[in-house]
Length: 123
Image (cartoon, rainbow, N blue to C red; front, top):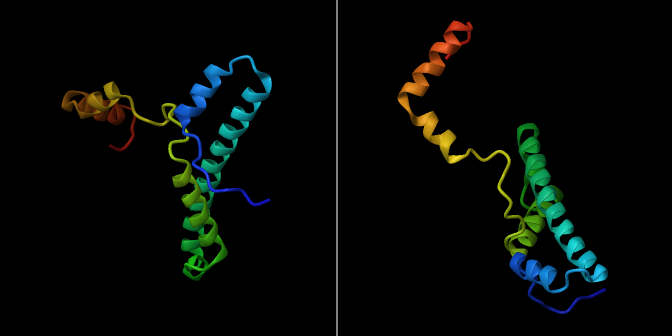
């Protein structure tokens, strides 16, 4: 099926559609499906990136520009760029500001180093 050219809905547009059509099961289902597939797209892009890193360690010829894995990686990256912002939820691995400030505090760094030494760990 060939689709006509179109601008994909932004994340904020999807949220607005969700609010406007709240309670309309079919519309909600379509919005959820669009967002679900976008999140899968992000996961696939990350997995393709990981596969390229592994292939690079094993045999660099596997990641030539015209290789299937690179074509997949490029296609996924283009689609992620086409869609725009997909997920704005805070990352679970992001370091909160107060933790960053704590880590920069010299007294805290010294305290942690002393604690590691007492436990017999290297700094």
